[in-house]
Length: 276
Image (cartoon, rainbow, N blue to C red; front, top):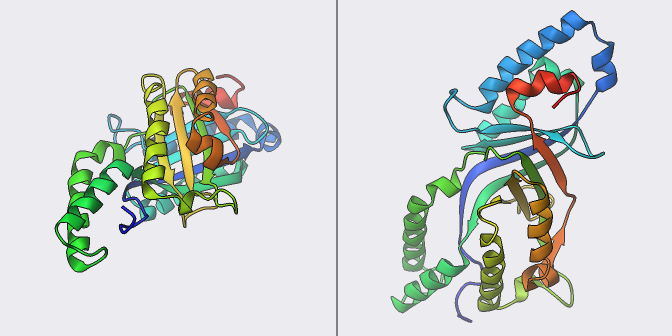
C-alpha cells in the first residue's frame, strides 16, 4: 500500500445547506393581528412547496425549533444540485416571513460516503492489473469501481431528511498538528481507525440516523455531521462513546453543536403563537 494513493475514494450525492436563524419576536408581536395571519398563511403555503415536490414525496427541506441561545429556527435543505440549493435559498427569501428572520449562521456541504474499505481493494485491484497510479488505465478502472459502488448506494447518496423528532448538527475537522496529523498517517492505519469508529456508530443504528456531509473546499470545516433521533439523549450517549475511540480521541476537532426539535409545517402557526 505504500506505493498506492493516500487519498481514500469518496462518493458524493445531495447538496446540503443548514441555515440558523434568529426570529425577530419584537417586530412580530408589534404587527397587527390581521397582517400576521396573512403572513402565516402565505408563508405556510410557500414552505409546503419548499418542503417537498408533492405531498407524498420525500422531505427535502425540514424546519426545526432550535434550543438554546444560538438561534430560534433551523432550516435543513437537501437538493440534487448546488444550483437547486441556491434557488431554494432565494425561494425562502421571497416569503413574507423572511423579514423577521436574521440569518446567524449557515453551513454548506455535500453528502459524502467515504470508501476506506473499498478504496484499498480498488487500488490493489488496479495495481494487480499492471496499471501505474493515475495512469489512464488506472483512472478508468477506478472510475468503473466508483460507478459500480454508486449504483448500489443511491438511497444513501440521495437521502430524504429523516422524520425524527430531534436534530443534532456539528462540524468537525481531522487534526493537522505538528505532533499528530491525520493526513500523514499510512492509509492502512486510517482505514483501521475508521473501521473501529464505524462499528461504534452501527451499534446506535436503530436509534440514530447519521448523515455525513463533506465541506472541504465548501465551508470552514471539513465535515458536517447531522444526527436524527426521537430521543435527544442518545446524541450524548453516541458522541460520548465515540470520544473514546482513537480516531476521535486523537484526531478529531469539533465545532459548535446545534440542537433542534422538528417543527412540521402544519405546526408552524402554533410555534409563532408560543406553542409546540
